[in-house]
Length: 349
Image 1 (tube, rainbow, N blue to C red):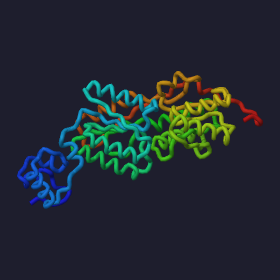
Image 2 (cartoon, helix red, strand yellow):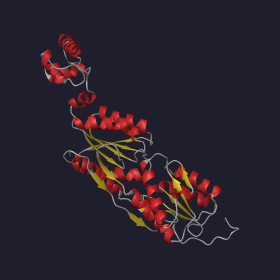
Image 3 (cartoon, helix red, strand yellow):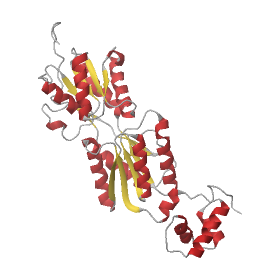
Image 4 (cartoon, rainbow, N blue to C red):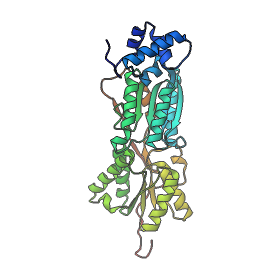
């Protein structure tokens, strides 16, 4: 006799009840098309054996749809738009559809989106965007993805460290080091950082790169103003206003993504502070509009469209016994928003 409890298989219930696996699945998932006599027998056997329905098996039993579920942090951020473009390109080549969900950098809402995609019977799930410094925040998502994979689902992520699945990892620390070294080589020492939301691994990794470059020049991140706000254009505006108010001696601002850098530039323009003559600004990502800003933005280029392609390509490959990792590389792109540190008089802010 099969052991009672969650390890019991639906096939065990079907065999004991004398029905097909499909019939047992229909009854226990609440679908119709089965006589009341058979349905009652299946439910009775299920109760007697202590069968606990597996939501993933129930979802996948009907077959997965040719759909890729893509969860991004923010759909209107060009960073995620370009990643989505890469996913869509590969999906089109493979005859797949892409369903995009928005998490708003809220791990609880992201988990709900993940469960919704599983309930929709998508065959592949991709998650793009920073993870969280506290692994406990992602523990439930990791469990959900593991169960989804164990029953045939495919998964890959972009920018996540702890989910235990195939991952495309942006070159965040090395990029932070390179863009900071660029400013230091231009003579800047009064540098401030417009940092994103605390607790995001992307923010932590990029700050680690900034810190590494500073140490190589005998400086410390602890001596720099690091102002946290949302990882958005509005967040960039908030940090720029605080930096100008509290640290008027600043000659360069490192924004940890291009969206924040755009917000910083808008505040400097409103205050009539010339860039880069008085203040240099650098970003991170090289979104498509970065070259078209006035001044054009110095930034770290990540291959965002390729990242989307890489993630879906990884998910489509045969499963591996260990999670696969793909690094993106990075390129420092020097444009008009960075220049030599100005000579500031003692009385001038």
